[in-house]
Structures are given as C-alpha cells and as structure tokens.
Length: 340
Image (cartoon, rainbow, N blue to C red; front, side, top):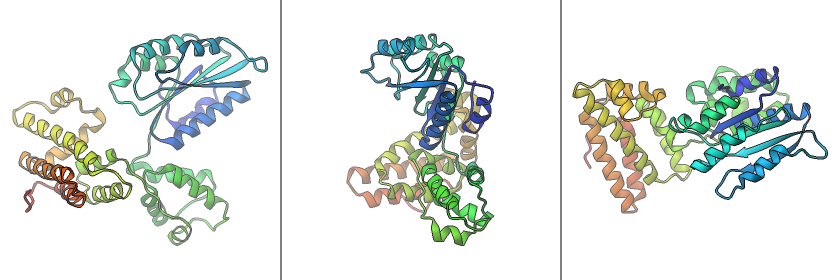
C-alpha cells in the first residue's frame, strides 16, 4: 500500500499498521512522517524505542533479539531501522525475515533513501509493501510547490496574496526545511492577513536550493529561463561543472538514441523500455524529441565535449559558459551560431 505524507494523518485515524517504510530525499517530510508515527505509537503504549542502521557492520541477530524482547517498563516497542543506499543479498534476506516477526506489540519504522524503479522491483521492497504502507517523500516540483506552500501556510493560520505566494515559491524552491522555518516565524508575528509581497520581502531571506537532477526536466520541457536559473544556483551552491557534464552526457545520449530509433521506424514505447526510461519521464522525453532534432542534439553533444575539455583544463569559467549555452540550446530546433 502506497501512502503520501499528506495522507498519513487520515490513515492513522483507523489505527497503526505493523510496519511503515518511509523513503526519499526530502528531510522535512521524512522527519514529520516519522514524528507523527512515533506520537501515535506512544499514545497507544509503544514506550520503548530502539534504532539500528543497516550498514555492513549491523548485527541482524541483535535486531531479531530486540524484536522478541520486551522492556521491563514497556509492553510495546518500536524498532527503527535505517536502510543504506543499496541492500546486499544477505541484508535483503534478513530484512524479509524480520518482517515476518511482526506482532501486535511491535512496530517497525523503516526509513531509506530515494529508490529507483529497479530497486522498487526488488523482493525486499515488495515484502515491505506487503507488510504495511510505503511512504515516498519527495520535494514538490515547481508545478505543485505553490499548492504545498498554501497548505503549509494554512496549517499555521496564515494566507498570502497571489503575488506574495509566487515570490515565496521562487525564493525557497527545493528547500522545504528553510521555508517551513520561515513560515513558523511568520506565524509568531501576528501579521495582517493575507500576507503581502512587501511584508515577505521585508521579513524573509530567500534560500532556494536545487540538486543537479532538477536541471533536466525544465530542459526537456524547453523552459530555458528556469533551467538557466537552476544552473546558476547550482554553481553558487558549489556543484562541480564536471558532475553536470557527466549527468548531461547521459541525458543527451538517451535523447540521441531515442531520436535515431524513431527515425529508424521504431516505436517510442519500445525504445523507452529498451533504454530504461522511467514512465514518469517519458512524456518529457517526447516533448524534447519533438522540439530538438538529431542535428541539434549532435551540436549539443559537441558543446558538451567542449565543456568537458574546459573541466579537464581546470578552466571553470569556460566550462560553466558552455553549460549555460547548452541549456539555451534546448529552446528550439535551430542550430546555434557558436561552434566548439
């Protein structure tokens, strides 16, 4: 059963499941989900809590012993287990054994990192899904961030004018921890409602944050201004140009293989399956393929090679100039008047 963080409170009204798996890269939503589960469990008498990290040094027998041993002061207990980026065969098997140990006086709270589609097809993930709700926690993308902000403001008895809400979304995109802290501060100031743009700009310090993977979707959509803004912010945050070159090379290679296959008469569906393109990204890929022909993709790859050479020569400014030009190149089908 898949739950989203905003559905958890309603789910808990019907009682606790024996196991929950919370996974993803968003720290605020992950922590809030864990806190809600812990509070609900404590109200039901789960007073004892033990935490384990499933790294290579974990003694799984210690977890199994804990799952069957009750504290002198508590008849019910929580075992929290944090999973690493990858589970080896032994850890996968032991985790599935642990899930079979669930009983009414034991609550398993398992957390993990962001998972790709292949990991979600693994036997251990399927076992977790069968044992209880799985809760993915992800940072809302730009399309839904305004709605998330509106809901978060309402939770604190606040509202904001449309222009103010847009500014807040721009100022804190990708950084839920920071914007949540600012909203909590605003709630303590007893300001007139709805909040205006002027009020926010006087009281709130912008702090947006992006990760490199957030650069690609705007590029595929042709939203060049947004992609360039993310690129500049990534540079300010200290992301290495070489890392972006590596990630862009993979993206451009996939697009070129798709374009070549389409020209050869193959179906997009089959090509996407062969290249392991996630279903959630296929419409974005199709949008880019309709806008950026093969000749343009080859030019962008040549520009990326120039960026790579600049990285190798420790010419950071030159590398970032090429990366900026590549972002602009995703706008349309016209070849650019620059050559590496």
